Image 1 (spheres, rainbow, N blue to C red):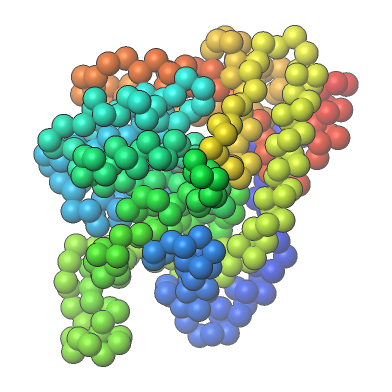
Image 2 (cartoon, rainbow, N blue to C red; image 1 turned 90 degrees about the vertical axis):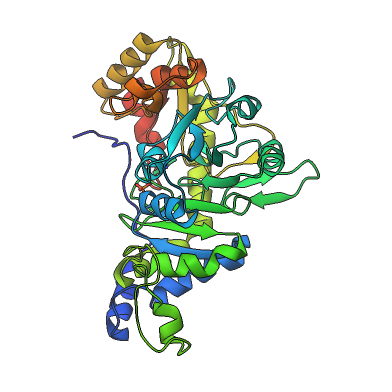
Length: 375
Ligand SMILES: *Cc1c(COP(=O)(O)O)cnc(C)c1O
C-alpha cells in the first residue's frame, strides 16, 4: 500500500440517492431517466449532436468503427502514442492501421506529419486529446476536409476541455469530429466505475447510431410506434449501460465544476513546486499549447532518459508515492510490431520511455505529499 496512491475514486455524496431513485423508477435497464439526463447534459452544455452512453470508451470506439461502416481495405490513421482501444476498435473491423508520430512539444499527434500518411484508401483519422489537452484542431480540420475523410476525436480524458480558435472562441473537445468518444473509467476526471460515451455530431448518422446502440434493432422507432415489429435492422450490440451506472454518473456530472476546480489547484501546485519537491532530478514540466484550455486530467513529467524515469519512480515509491507511466507505442506492441512497415516514430517513443504521471485525484493531500518527499 502506498501512502499516496496514483488515483482514488471520488464520491460527490449524491450517488447513492440517485441510484435509489433509479430503483424507485422501476426501470434499471438502459436508456431510462438518468441515461437521458446525462446525454442531454452533454448535448446542451457542449453543443454535441447526439450523445450515447456506453459501458466504456473502448465500446464507444467500437461503435464508431461500426457506424462508419469501416472494413477490410480501409485505412485508419491514428497516433501510435495512444491507448490500446484506440487501435483495437478499428483492427476488430479488419481495417489497416497507419500510425503517426507525436509533436515534439507535447504528446499529441503531429498534425504536420499526417498528410503524407493519407492514401486513396484512407477513410478516417483518429486523434487523441492527450490528458485533455487539445490537438491543433484548425489544421486538422483543414486536412480532414481537403481529403474527404472522417474525423474521430478520442476525447476519452477530455471532458470539459476546450480548443481555443485563432479568433479566441473556446470550442469544446468532442464537438469538432464527425464522432467523438469519452471515458468515465474510474481513473478519469468524472467517473462511474466503467463508463463511456459516443458523441455523434454528423446528423446523417443519428438514426444508424440509435440502431447500433440498440443491439442492431429498430427499438426506437418501434417504441415510438412508427414500426410495427421489433426487429433486426443492422449490425449492432448492447452498448447502453444500466440506469445504475447512469445514476452514479449523473451525481458526478452535477459536480463537474468543483471537481475541475479542485484538480486545477493540484495541477498548478505541482507545476509551481515540482522542481523544489524533487531536487536533483532532471525533469521537464508539461507544455500546454496556447490553443488548449485543458481539464487538469494528467500531470506528467518528462525525464531525461528511461533510466532517469526508473530512478524517479523508485525514489517516489520509497517515499510512499505511486507514480505510473503509459503508453507503450502501439506500432511496436507485441500484437502489431511484425506488421509495422512505417518510419520510426521518434517522439512517440520518447514519450513512451520518458513520461511519468504523478498522482492526481480530487482529495490528494498536498501537505502529505510534500512532507513524505522532503522528510
Ligand atoms: C482511458 C482511455 C481510453 C479507454 O477508456 P475506457 O473507458 O477505459 O475504455 C481510450 N482512449 C484514451 C485516450 C484513454 O485515455
